[in-house]
Image (tube, rainbow over all chains, first blue to last red; front, side, top):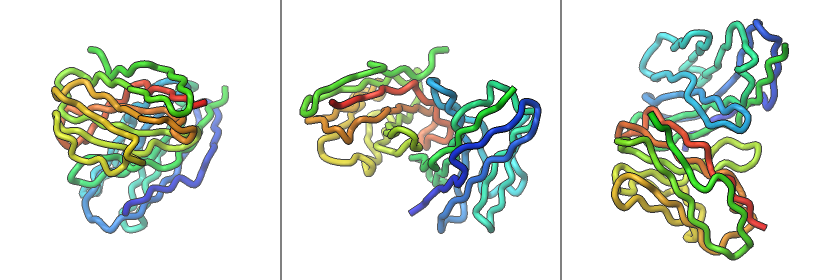
Length: 114
Length: 114
């Protein structure tokens, strides 16, 4: 069975600074997908970034980038130039290559302070 | 265009009552997922449809939980004889592809069982 672990329940960062959220996972599969989702307070979950395990290049989406270390089963999210609107719960998630369900971590609550 | 919608947004049920939660996916989306999110936790998978076929119901916690999507569009999650441990936010997500590789989430239904 696959598991996803986020070891940082809460983090804070000053506006305009950079923050890194950690995620580790466990799987015996070689191909899979990894995701970071953002859940703002009282708002719905949205996809931030996705990484295919067969791709060596780390995914980037504007201010968001990942550090994917397949051998270490680590998938961290870096947010550059943090903005107040980045305040949210962030969930790391795993999906088998066949698709289907997302397996989520416990989440990291990020606060961006002015 | 319209996103995933869920109704009701809030539901209070007395222990032992039956409830029905509705999900309207994005038009044309093939896959539909239900997740349960307890307070302060990451979402946990309940069940998954591809069109009207229920491909995976391994996450349903008991036979009191039942989901359907009879015409491959709207889905209903029914919980019979609700119990206090059923209190959670129930999230619905849909995806244009069969595998669910890019899931769009609804706002959720917050169920409180008293």
